[in-house]
Length: 331
Ligand code: G3H
Ligand code: 13P
Ligand code: ZN
Image (cartoon, rainbow, N blue to C red; front, side, top):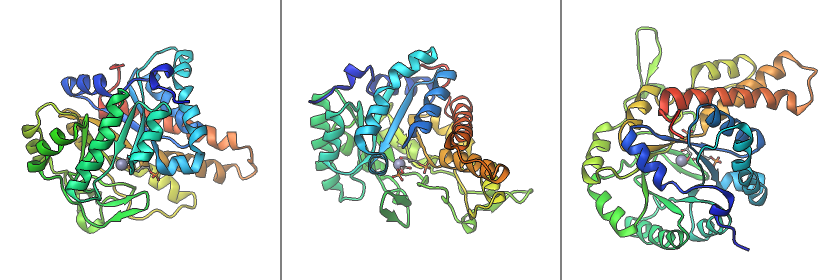
């Protein structure tokens, strides 16, 4: 039997995005695949009093089993009450690629879905997105579409180069599909290797500085669709302290370069009202697990390494909410 997200106490993204655009901040959209990640996300957002978008990818559904995963998310509203603060929670499908997948999520308690038609032709993207919007809106579920292609890897699809969003297409896309928010391509990409060292400059301390995001394209888009909610994927900053810890304790991460936090802060002050972060959380957890494994070789209780990983993730996401996205105290 279908379950509406409203029965679960979740909210769709409509009101949250309106407030975020007006207030000059972005809602965090954090991915989760397991118990420790959802605990860390919710704890961080409760402690910072931030609204939150819990994101589930197709890969997460395959890894954790979609039934188990959504039941974890169904406990989120009661869990945050127990933690002492009733923050708004959106349960969102990340990078949905078919109508059937989006429908399954809508029928099973998701309050928001992304239909990512960005790898299709423009007209096919419109047709697919419109079909999802019609079904979603009949259930009061919000829909994110995407125009332009991010470089890097998304699930199994690899794009070598960015195809930046074409500002001249956004009015047509938004009006013909009826989407509630639009993911755009302005230089972010998925994963921990967003730029090659050759694409970067070095500052006086030898730190690699990546090329800036295309704020000119963002501004053009904002002129075309003023106040319309914009989404940035691929927004991890790849904290160098995590990369160093991972490599210190036996890891081998190379050329790990992310989006500088100041640029995300600038984006969050504009119509960008949802910022997707996953890789930074993976780095935080991996650094913490590697450190425990290296320093306590006799440890074999998963709680003794997943617990510190959860704590590090919570610390990182509190920092993001307070200092990068500006979503703290907006719940
Ligand atoms: O955009 C991709 C997200 O980081 C989710 O990654 O598909 O490996 O779960 P995943
Ligand atoms: P990162 O890989 O930069 O964390 O991006 C995550 C994302 O866009 C999820 O949809
Ligand atoms: Zn993404």
